[in-house]
Length: 82
Image (cartoon, rainbow, N blue to C red; front, side, top):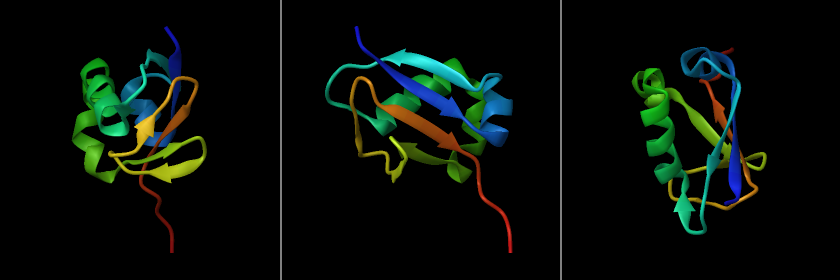
């Protein structure tokens, strides 16, 4: 089965306890469905879900976006600054 590569950055990496995982992914999976798998595997991510952003292959993405085998998904912490 083909996989999706998931990269965690900043606080998301700290909470996940890793910077990268690979998940099996079939056609027709959405980012929201992928998130459900991630949050079960890394439950410490759930409390910060509302502050996280996601990107697929370097482009910001919403939960409705499809994730295809071979894609790279980034889990991004909130950006602060002024």
